[in-house]
Image 1: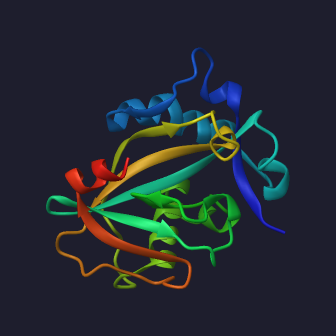
Image 2: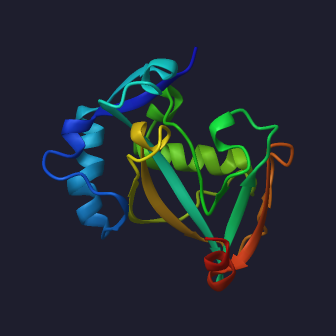
Amino acid sequence: MEFVWVVPRSSLFPEATPNGFLALEADQLEQRFLGPARDEGFFIERRYAETHPEFKQPIPYVAICQDDKVLCLTRLSTQGEKRLHGKKSIGIGGHINPCDQSDGDLFANACQRELHEELILPSDTTLPLIPVGIINDDTSTVGAVHLGLVYSLDASQLNVSIRETDAMAGEFQTLSDLRSLA
C-alpha cells in the first residue's frame, strides 16, 4: 500500500484555479503553493487520492536542460501508470512519499529521490534545482488530482542517461523540435 502527500484543493486555490503552466518566481511559488502544501498537506492512501479531486497531489517535476536542449521522455507501455502509456513529457517527477520527510525540504527531497530513481547520476550529487512554477490541468482525470511543482535543472555538466530504460525512452531535443511535437 502506497501513501502519497495530498493537499485540500481549497488550500491551494482559495480563489481562481489556474489552468496550464503558471510561471512563478521562487518566493511567489513558496508563498502561494509550497507553503500551503507543506502546512496543510498530509499522507493518504494513493488509490484513494487518485479518485478524489477534492485533494491535489503535489508532484515535484523537473525539466532537465543541457545547453539549448531539454530532455524529452516517452512513457513506454511497460511502465506502471497505464494512463501515461505513450505520452511524452519534458520532466521527471513523482509522488511525495513518507520517505521524503527526512532532513530538509519535503519537495526538494522528493525531487532528488525521483531524479536518482529515474536517471543514472553520480549518487553523491545533490542537484541544484531552480523553482519555475506550477502546472495545473483539471481537464483530464490525471490532472484533476495532481499539481505539478515545476523545477529546472541545468545538467550541462552532467552525463545524464535514463535508468528505467524498460519503462521510458528519452533524448535531448531543442525547443523548436519540442514545439513540432505539439
